[in-house]
Length: 177
Image (cartoon, rainbow, N blue to C red; front, top):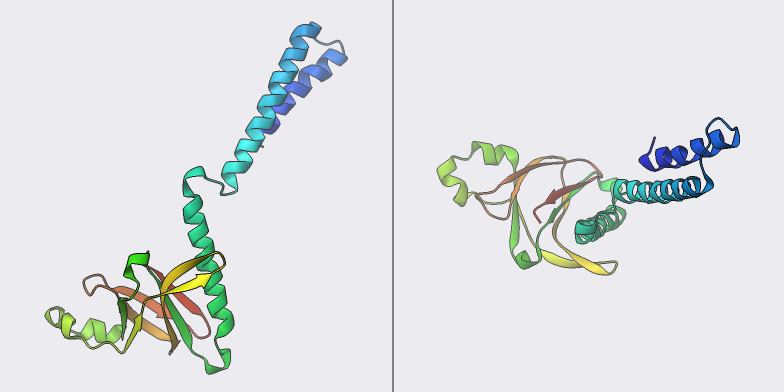
């Protein structure tokens, strides 16, 4: 039960008890109490709704970015050919990384490679990070299409690799930004 509903009930109970002559409250105090509890009840109900529905004052930009990324993911999902039984990997990044390359290798190659030789590991795929227009803004991402299902290691910086699994007819997401 919400706090606002409780406050509204606290205003309704004295009204009901006063009507049955169980308690006697002067009309001045009764009107003031009823008005105060009603205002507090409505305010508490609104506050609970606002904060439970994802409406947070400090994170509106984050919510917009998340909505744009989800819209881009749906756009990519609709555009690829599902009869090929391939997957797509989308690596979201920050705006200042546009133009850099994202590298991808099979995870087995990454694991078998000696740690001192990782910088010489030849990626099986590279993709440039680009800006893509989505709704009223843009997202920055590298989109690696037509990947065979499997486990991969992807990196923008060789010292910060990320493991990711790609599945048939699905869009895998790596969020670097």
